[in-house]
Amino acid sequence: MLAVIAPIVYLLDLATKTLVLRTLEGREPLVVVPGLLQFRVIFNSGAAFGLGTGMTIVFTCVAAAVVVAILRTARNLRSLPWAITLSLLLGGALGNLTDRLFRFPSGFGPGRPSPLQGHVVDFVETFPGHFPVWNVADSAIVCGGILAVVLAWRGYQIDGTRDTGTGGHAKEGDDV
Image 1: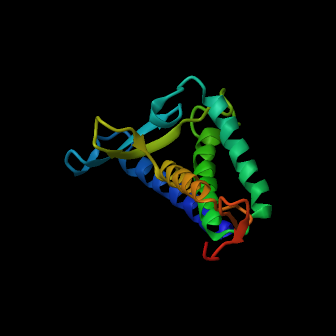
Image 2: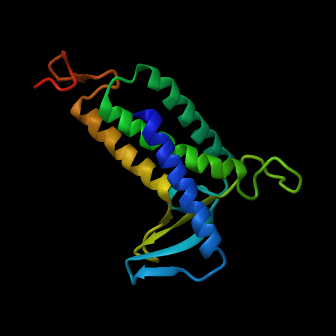
């Protein structure tokens, strides 16, 4: 499941960013539903909600560490809900990490003086002026994070067992 969902999320993120850059960069926002939804290209050097704009290298390293941690954790993965959760997190982290590594001002060629400092392309603006602009990768990361909290709260383990809160473990799917 991880090998299916994560690449889909990653490719969907790359495709949508490519599309909006080709069609909307340098143009006025495309209003879909006035006051509710519009598409507007921005380049985000920080983290979610525009925080930490001067810490791009840190976010790049954190994203790389998250990718490595998920891939290492995947060896013990025996839970379908956790596979979906980690797939969303992995696909989203890879999408934004790709921007951090290869988008301006980052890169590895001449004229690209700032390796690991690329800006993430954000383009979906809900409640314009009242909510941050985001992308497919951000959405996947947020959904994966929420699922991780719910699964942990409910006692679901990555190995397919469930902590019943009584000191025992049940297999995923057992009635508890």
